[in-house]
Image 1 (tube, rainbow, N blue to C red):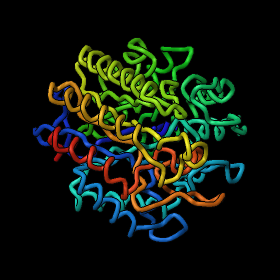
Image 2: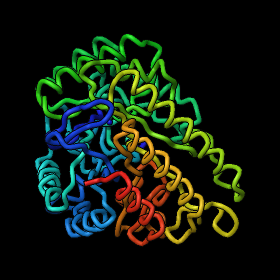
Image 3: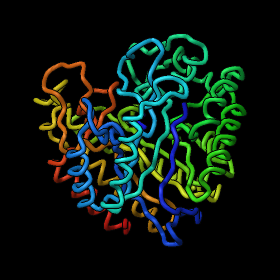
Length: 404
């Protein structure tokens, strides 16, 4: 969704797979993580997105909750057709092979801060979705065509034109030839939330060759593909069976996937969502074990209450109650920590941390840099530094799994 042409994952530090768990320097490593996709732009020395003071404050608060890993964007793409809708700017890659050095330095600066807070990073090098440019932008560059953006970003709708266009990234041989030339000369990795296609072979080939190349560059890092793993065991196996994929990935989005009814104030909808979560985590543990690979839940989220006086747009306010979110977060903590104890999961990372930032109170075209990417309503899934009850759940989860 929300979060990796290629989105990719590296877990920085000396990590080795010891299926179905992972280790740093031969010591078990369990993940209590936060998605903080804004890091690269916030870390810039100057400019509209720059806010290094906020970065330090946010990392301090996360450290207090026992968070030991942040999952960040480490690439973004511009366009040959000018500023594009709902995209993070400034972009790191302004044209194929041409980079904005100021954004690169923002990434370098941020990575240099992490040891101060005893954190590692999952580094996402691009995105299937266009809020960072992503796969569709590479197709646009290779074909010099405009992207057929959906009228609205709704995971429950069939965005056929967009999906068909974007999937050319790993299906169209002529486009693959062009994009691989760009990637072979630069850092390459896998994709956040790659979507299934009508060709199992083309998707597996792309994952396998890309992961092999990454492993040759970074043999001491775990390599993952950012998959949601929402389409059943067959597609899970296709996306993870490569021997070069050393960390399996899954995401869980009850609202986006149609399990949760945000206007239902009863317990029925949230309880059903938790039932589907438990089923999902159990399945993923079994599927990953069958491949003898560690697996992590690297995205999950729930919005504020969205009924009664908080119906409609009011539900995106930082002041809206979050009774269902806390119940869902507690369920994630309970289920995943039990699987970590059984050595079936490495941990989990919530989506997403806004920290000291707050969404705008009036309509604006500027990026708010809260926890929600530019194509989503500001405040939808953001966790703020004032959300003490939610943060307490995360802190207890960190303790329970022994996150260090």
